[in-house]
Length: 198
Ligand SMILES: [Zn+2]
Image (cartoon, rainbow, N blue to C red; front, side, top):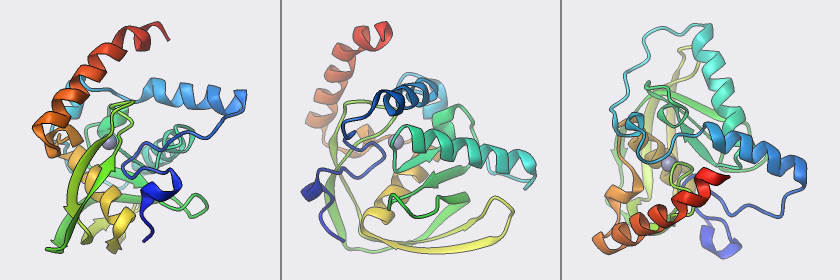
């Protein structure tokens, strides 16, 4: 995998938005308006497993994929749209299909780890260094209940781990240094009045 920083992209969910035309910007703003932010208890709650694979599950997957797409994110977990169940979506390559993982379990990760800067749609403007294993193997179900085994490395592995953290109520603030967490909290506090006006 190429170093994601070298082309201006950031791993995690939030990517540097390219210059957007007004329509894309309006879509991004609308998507960001439904994404829950730090302070919302749903982000700190361990999400429940999905038990029935019905239309509601597939509708939720479609809704999450649309929010992720419009927000220009590379991943999104259900709690971020206010749904406390164990579903995540991600798309690491812009043109590849969206992957939906339901009830994901990271059954193996490499001892080999790396530190990279991550962002999060729930923490707009915050970028902190996070150390994560480089390779993971994940068992999950798709939106129809079919079994999936995903072996991922690099950016894909990082995004999956970031989203699984969301399902456990864990944020990148919990996985960075004390100093970076402090700085991030200050930046979020300072940005708040602007965010509320927007
Ligand atoms: Zn996130």
